[in-house]
Image (tube, rainbow, N blue to C red; front, side, top):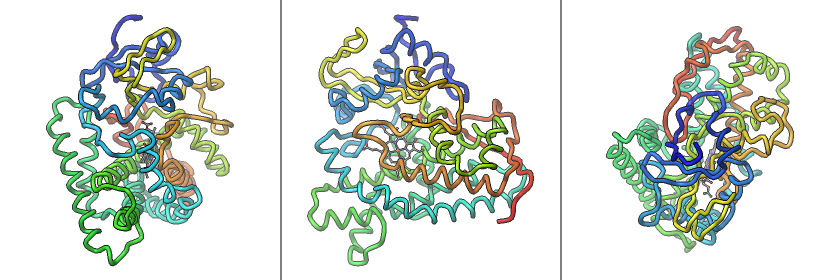
Length: 404
Ligand code: HEM
């Protein structure tokens, strides 16, 4: 298959087991030619070190993905002027505006509240009984409530922005027009929210959008378009990935009940287990796109300026060059430098918040449902065939329910 241009996502995507195609590419074709859903031909790197290089080396740009004629991976057009579509120094300036909100110590202050919320959602699961769908009852509402609170977006609008977000990650060519409309509506929604905050600037609220609006009023260099891009970016990035990961973490543990039992017996393993599950779970079947801004040679392949390169995080996380027994789930794995939150300047802004959400939701379920099990064989669970993929459902049986 050395010269073939492969279509991504591969045929072996959207399942629990590791991809044989990624394994084959890592060994024999570390810089491979692939065709994206939007019809662009780009390079795909699959080895751990190469993925880190592409994500961190300034010769591979994010700003260039919004330029005219740039290769496209998805149906949704990337939004200019956002954290994800700028390079340093613009990116550094934007990131500084929000970095204190997401700083480790400040975000840790949300932990007790996230734990309380997780316990309340576990009550909903107990009330639903056997067959309860954890995706609907825990994995989605938890990160949505957290990001709404943090950003200052009304929780009652969730149905609307969920629908727009779903479409934003669509991979169905037939939905192309719907995707564009959804992105326009989401942008207009955030714009209206920002306008309302501007109109009530004399009554400050304790949320991030309000903070950004006030920073702009106080003369910080931040355009209206950048402000709106922040809102869209954080609202979308802040819930979809966490929701998918919460479901995947629980499902992966329940696939081998001894793993669930081990965590029930020893909660101190939860932090390392979450890191290992983040490494292990398949969550993006395509990869993170960059565009080369100069010619770069990698493993004897010439990547020309203007060409797209995708960094396959899932594949890097299973690279035997970086991990001992990468296809083994080791809940106590040490020194786990997985790439699920990316690497380099665009390293996930919400990584610590996501860790808190994952750890606390897992702890609440372990405490309340020590005998939790899948209500359907794992291999029959339905997957969401979208850009940031995950399970479409997670029906469980509860077993003994511990008191709240
Ligand atoms: C388990 C959940 C999450 C995963 C796996 C995840 C993964 C990622 C990855 C891989 C990137 C880097 C993309 C690239 O380099 O092209 C990223 C960036 C980002 N993430 Fe997350 N994320 C998660 C949760 C969150 C949350 C909860 C938030 C917000 C509160 C968030 C906000 C962002 C933002 C704003 C960026 C762009 C950062 C930049 O470009 O400087 N993420 N995320």
